[in-house]
Amino acid sequence: MKTLSLEELLIAMNIQPTEKQKGIRIQTVTNDIYDIRSNALYFCWYDKEVPVKSIKKYKNVFIVTDTPFAHMEKLKPEQLIMVRDLKETFFAFTSFYRHLFTIPVVAITGTCGKSTTKEMLKHILEEKHNVQATISSKNADYYNLPYLMGIDEDTDVAIFETAVAAKGDMTECCKYFYPTIGIMTMIDVDHTDQFESFDDYRIEKAKIMEGMNNKGTLIVNMDDPYLSSMDTSDFRGEIITFGKKEDALFRIKHYQYHTTGMTFCIEYKQNEFKGYIPGLGEHNIYNATASLAAAAILGVDLPYALNRLSSYRHMKSHFEIIKGRNQITLVDDTWKSNPASLRIGIQTLSRIASPSQRKIAVLGRMDSLGKYADEEYENAGRLVGDLAINVLITQGAIAKEFTKPAIQAGVNPDNVYHFSDIEKMKRFFDSFLKPNDIVYFKTESDLDDLIEYLSN
Image (cartoon, rainbow, N blue to C red):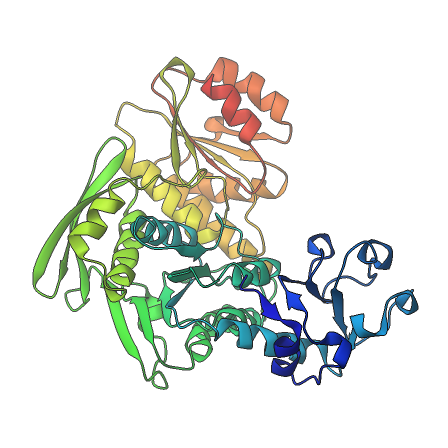
């Protein structure tokens, strides 16, 4: 965080500072009680109980709240900043702080591909730039303020994931970051337990344009049917497209699978560029192309960006290939399970497996689907059969919903198994697995212990 005076922060929030609030430097702004320290401004945002006793241990801690709290009389009057509307005041602060810096800010949204695209772009840039970015896939709203506070005078560019789990999430997220560049990777059913319909979910994603004040640069996957049909009539900035279609500005011309990565070729402004990325799957070509488009907009030379991508280290548990014991191949794709990522994972599994390999899919529940759950389990189960997955193993009660449609689509019922206990799965795999098997794991449950057991 850039150190600022309390006086200028209060004025930015339309609060008149008192004499005792002047001349004080603020080094920390937080809404987390565990981050309170000396010279801190604390927004009482999430916590009902303010830790007055702990606060008294520090010097120059100021509390912004619109609600009285227990033991507040034990603090000095100047420490208490009572406001009419805490949310309004808080976002007055985030707007002020963000606009202290005239740097490009990239916001990435989509059902799948946010984290990988962000990590690829960060890897391209960080050799020559000071980059502030989302950590791993930690994109929940309570991370937004710490990420914003990570921007300071030395930051050259910021890259953030803008997740949507409920109505209003996109609008609120953009009130922290005010992005100048937006990337939309792809849209499919997810978090529909918090929306009345899938259309409402799509509309919330599209609000990234409003969050950019309908200007700047929007990078869109034009091969995605939901994004290609999105209403952009109010957007006054530049729209950059990527995909396989001939009229995509960043056109994916072809790609080829290799043992641990993929070579590919894209066309941009009538020039062809070839590259290599670690990691397997067509989806990673799309993620790479989106990151290259953003890099180009940021002024990075494409050959340099492609060279940087060749040394990118693929994210853990995102279709991670692991060498298992006894010549078994393990695919850890357990970071998240939703219909789109499961479909992509099963398709990629089918694509990389050799004819001699038994394809074994270990599937757990898909989360947050609401009224679309039955349909999506049906679709996923049928896909398992359509792509000739040899063995289906379901883990957890809800995952049994994959079984019936998979069998109807051609999976041998004798090759369908169900487990709830990890230790029983270990014993089963001890006797069941054969050399050259490939085992794909896709579940919201933590299977690290099982995967580690099979890799030793």
